Length: 80
Image (tube, rainbow, N blue to C red; front, side, top):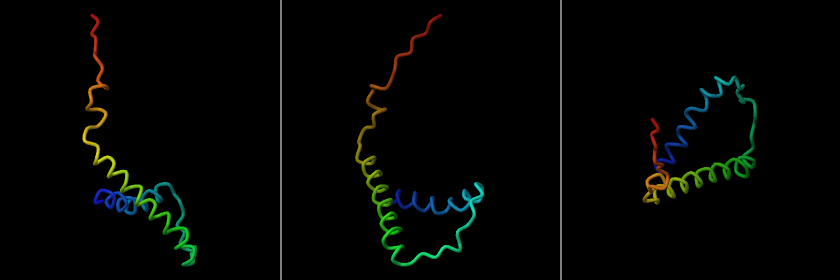
């Protein structure tokens, strides 16, 4: 869960500089109602958090990754 929180925090921190580099104008004049916030924004943010946590848990629970199984290694043949 700590990894997920760091990921979400880094998205929040790095979003403003990226938007400035891409020259996307700020949206200060948009007024959102509380109903819109709780019916649209909050469920999307909660879903992003749950998917992030479940993705990190599934990676954490995997004891051996596919790259360590030996099936991905290839034999190198040298031709002189």
